Image (cartoon, rainbow, N blue to C red; front, side, top):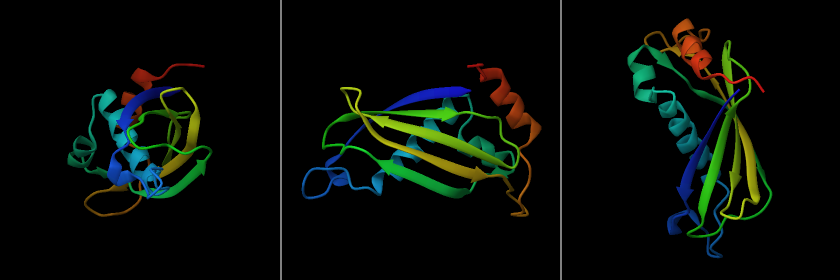
Length: 137
């Protein structure tokens, strides 16, 4: 398992008229946290793409539990529970400053050759990187 925490601030433009985060923004929060997760491994998405690999989104799930409010600091915990093969699943928990669970979700990404745009398995270099950060539960 690999786990990483990212801090995000709710901006005014993320909220609706009631000052509550619009549901669509959680997907953006997942992406920001996933990018931060990758950087914590020492690799940006730009680095991945320069190595000829693309990781398109295949599926998104999101469960709304409590509202996030304007100007709250959110902690998004990103978890990778299993090493990928042809797909990689990231799990997310979004909490407010009090630690209340506001949202949980999952994104599934595939692996694709950048040049051919054909699906592929997770490359060994990417698996090796994940293994160096892997912690048994």
